[in-house]
Image 1 (tube, rainbow, N blue to C red):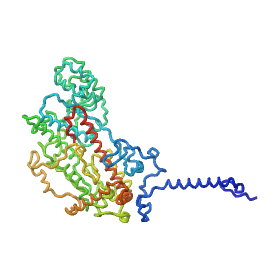
Image 2: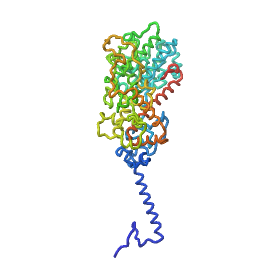
Image 3: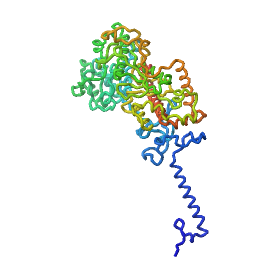
Image 4: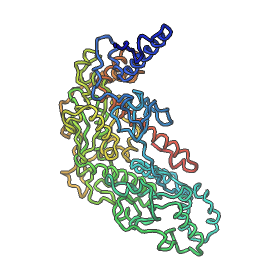
Length: 609
């Protein structure tokens, strides 16, 4: 016997007129759900499709497409993260997240093309310096001390610390200050105890004289230790006297209480001398920091001393210290500085600012003793003896002996300047290679046959990774050279080299650098004429006017968005660099305002930039 036909499990013969509408509604809903789920899983088309030129979704990198909701890691946010304080500055916005390297393209996580994933900002350990303002000093002496304090703060900030100047106001806030005033002790001990009281009010940590500076090789183990802020004992270093101390608050407070309970301390001249031998651990290892003690100055740098004027001595010492900080930095990169210049035929105007910066870093500034080395680096190569070289290769050279300056252009800027075009259209985009800038600079580093996704991931590691940040600096091409670079490098960038070429012992005259106009041109690639450079600069300015406009506000910005979709990796590298640079400026400016507003030390910090 034949069975009656069935539809979705229901015998057709049993469908009554009353049940048929319900079945049709059920089937319609099922179809809508199926179509909706399929549409949701399809990636959005790039902006070029809006131009009606029959361009398909293949314009986006098929292998580089952002993850869809089906393969997004469950630990990552499913909606655009809420804007937080400190995540937007100078036209850039970012999200700080530990998973900043989990994806090549930030928008797949932030769900916003303009917001970039950056690594979390590292906490800066505070380092304290006490300034004694009780002694009567001339205005010139105070100004000279301010210069030294500024040099000290700048050098430690560049090494990842948060320098803080303490004063008598901090010491008077200590709960034992009244007891301190009644104690019987030498004036030297009381003066030293004041800085300990101030140090205790900020919970201990690192206490330094402003004549102790980090003219130090890169990645020295001591800096790693100090940045962690983990100090087992109250410690000083044998070759630094009491000029550099570390300790937890409980140990600092215990030492202060021990001193306050002692009687007749007229012979002791410092807190550590008055304490028992087991109260402070003495580290006898060689200290890598540079300490300009009175004894060191007298024996090694006597030429800076002006017996008739303490202010002039301090001015000269400050010039010498700044010179030594520059020399220590230069010695970290014996193979010189690379200013990356991919597609060099028309890139002269684009890298002009970075090249000027490189020449400044390689310069040999005026110094009272230019043939000397920092006290902790007696075998250095002073810049008068070994001038630092500057070159402009088209590709990144992965060497720890080289410092790299990279100028990262927006794809629109790179296209206009590289091809000397006033504008571009969709046809030109489709016929051009994808991600030409990133491909060019990573050619020697990563080779051929590497996806753009991998190239941009490696670029981010170079620009913001744990190790690479001290070996390179990356700047957006459309912005001026940042104003905080003295603080980034830790010394005042020289505006020009020494004016004279006189030989100063022990440097022979034939090893002194020649004047700049006599130096051979080391630029790699063709040298552009003045007319060509002017044309490049005009095109770069024209590109800026489009790059900086609001998204999709004009036909130019719509075409810009299309180029961004075509060169996703170049766009990501540019946004990442711009956000990184903006965050660095924001961090410095916020700290500078906080430091200047601290009660009692405004005079010391009146020049903070």
